[in-house]
Length: 236
Image 1 (cartoon, rainbow, N blue to C red):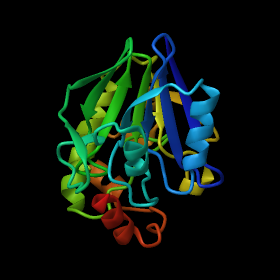
Image 2 (image 1 turned 180 degrees about the horizontal axis):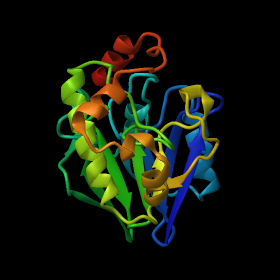
Image 3 (image 1 turned 180 degrees about the vertical axis):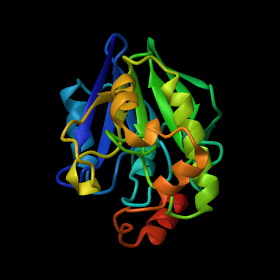
């Protein structure tokens, strides 16, 4: 019943998603970015121009400017679906952990998974797909050094990973970044919870102090203008 389109945005390594309930022709746009609005529109057209019910962000991005507000205005969705912890100043539909959004015959469950940011959500779609944002990558996790208290964020991310590892090993993991552009060694664009438990070093660390060491050593340079990008995304 549910179709998931993974949109890899040029050579950026960034990913947007379109979720479609085939039966009811209702869609959701997740994590769209400026400069790639046409790519999302092309996908909606290819899917038969369904009714867009929600525009959702997994978190406040620090490497690309969001175009969620553009799609909210275009499709009159009543605000960007975001965590209640977000400091977003635009029109927002705030979520709490465990909330369920109905999309036609499909359900999207909100999992609050802070760490990479304080306002991070993952989205579980009908027990089939898990949109993990930057909480989890293929073979790695999202960085914690883009604002906030590093130790606090490391501990939050550690706990969020414990939440994810309790989920079905067959659950399909759908990350927000793929490939070399984000220092991700795998060329795969999907994974599973079971595979990440077996192969992802970050998930295998079970001590918070050891995890903090992992999270604060050997990371690539921060994105250009990351502080301004965050502020622009919060401004809406």
